[in-house]
Length: 466
Image (cartoon, rainbow, N blue to C red; front, side, top):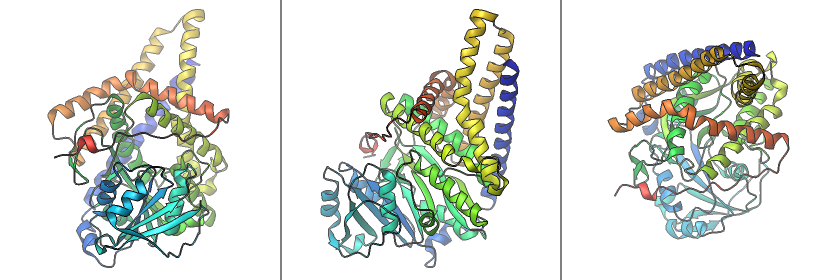
């Protein structure tokens, strides 16, 4: 057993070293070519592709007005904002109607993706808000259904899926649309870095000053985001093996999404499942495609700030991962499915899904050795130290790349705290995420009732700059 864990540890380290090198090369390539099509040209062009921003809203009455105004402030010549009121039981719809002078209109609604009943479409009588469309629908406790209604209502060929409480950079649409314009190969989707908004300051719906989060869970989530978005997804973008475009911010080709049937309501990881299904669809059609990730921080979202909500989120993510891998298992190790079947899915099985299980098995075997066979402390120390040092090395490199490209934190104190958390993460935070993953796998295996759960947020009010 010691030999197996030793071999697996070496395999794991080599995989991440390769991803790190590829990410670094791809980031350099991205910034070297960033002037090929300057975003200002896209922003000022009247012939650019139209984009629909789709944002579901459920009981967002406290912040809905400021959030919608933030989405409407995009610097892009041809876009609309589609707010899907997902059967809110509070005053979300009433506030939208009052603030934006909305009236119910006759709307040609074509249900190209099966979805819940739509009660009406609303447009503003004020020309200032002519880019806003509000859709009121029956709630079926599924974000996927709300987005599908938004896709059915959207008028443009590209759409961005986001959360209504996310804060987007003003040029987010211009940056996300560039891959669709530049690539000769069909682009199915594009994504960008998501950042944690906890402790940040916002002014008029835009980021005013970035701070490293003060909350325990938010601090470590920021580390995770930096590592996964910069270190991992840039590499998979280069290999054309991206399986996930974040549900908080992703741009999609609408026709392809409609062809595959939209988001699945029964999926607990609907964003990953959609991308995987789109890839499968294109492989079946034997058509070339790309899913592209760009190394830009374009979206800020609030992370769970207490243990209950955090665990609920991570358990759902783990169940979603297990569910998605099971749903699409037929593609595993099949050359017919190209990079998806031969690289991306195997990676998620071996280096994502199995890791929490192997950690648990490893702990069990260490305890058995300790009590019955005599513990090989030298081997344990070597393996544990190697994994710890490599884990911190990967995170430190990610932070270096992040500061090199974004300069997200200007405060020395913020940077120092961020670096300090790197060394505590494996001991304080990683065990919690491992526990959540194992719990999620157990729920999936036992076919526990699928509950999304309400992700209560504190909102941006407390961090708005005055």
